[in-house]
Image (cartoon, rainbow, N blue to C red):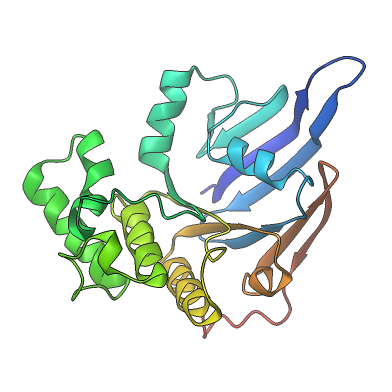
Length: 236
């Protein structure tokens, strides 16, 4: 059985090809196995956001290959990429991206509507995922009636409701205080423990230290790829 979920080979992303070209990604190769908890860390301008856009099928590489679950997604059309994003990847962003006039359940249900899931099933999935993030008492609340940490938990519930194989979290604690950040990281670790593949994109060493594996990006290249010796599997 092949347990490789993500395989990136010689990936390049070049902006303004020619004299003033910018190599946002410069021959990056990487494999991520099913069920891993990986942090991709880099400073602003390092290429980590470009890399996240590639992994999330939000953009296509200039050259190189990207296999997701054994399928080459690097040469897909926009419509095909949209399908992949819809079914394979759960996104958690720094901005919670919730719809202001919808309550928590309705926000979580929204992507499930696009997936064609019937009303009863999506309602059950939304309730289940909100319970997983500890919001069973806030299901009828709108974003304005919740704290930042609670809104981010709704965003996580939305990302995991359809049970996608990959959870891609881009600076998921960027807008939160330290107590809320801790809660969100604990939830992401819990996801990992249930077998999800969780990829954290961050510039923060403290957050990267929560992951089992840390990939550092600098100048569009992978600078290091290490297993965190202090990672506590039990705690996770």
